[in-house]
Image (cartoon, rainbow, N blue to C red):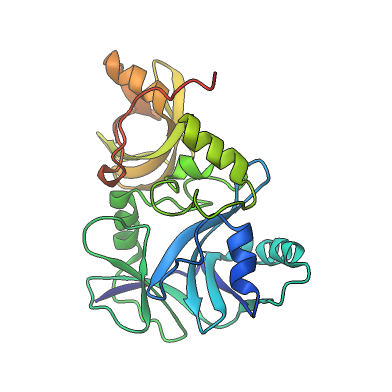
Length: 280
């Protein structure tokens, strides 16, 4: 088994009689249908439909849920969820002294939950506890994320700057369009039904080592996107699919900081580079 501690991640617990109803009405993913064995990606959106907080959510106990998110976002997330709580019977608290780890190449166990973002190949798990021991290394996990097209806030996109569709949440159960209203649902639903998603997370392969995250990706000196996570000559990027489609059609070289790159959509998405449907 390979496990890597993720010190940049922390946990929040929301539990109580009304916790499930509260979450089902507020966050983007389906909570009612969440199996106990899974950690599901989800988001708390702005009313304009952009990702304010991105997280993994899993069940804990009879009426509780764990939120696995960027440690720097824990305080603001608790504050925002407390605002939405109103009179709901639910407690919202930071989980202290409990580590977060990613694990793979292992047999399922009670202490592990499947990370649902990894949609193909061998499962990747999340482990929560104070006894996490590193048996792998951070680069191995980063490569897994890149290979599977798994984006994370703060590394591949900034809070309040991306829609769920941009980071593939419409395809990995990060948003539910069947459960009814949630914060930002109207915008997400409109993007889905009109096919107006203009940006997507892609995998990047460079002819040489990739430059630092945040470097613009260009075709014919026009920006088509921006690098996120990078590892040697591979990485993730958030790009305009219509501009990439045009560059590919015209055989225009695509560059990241002068390095020639190849962009591919993760195979599990079933997506292709093509212009989005017009909003008109």
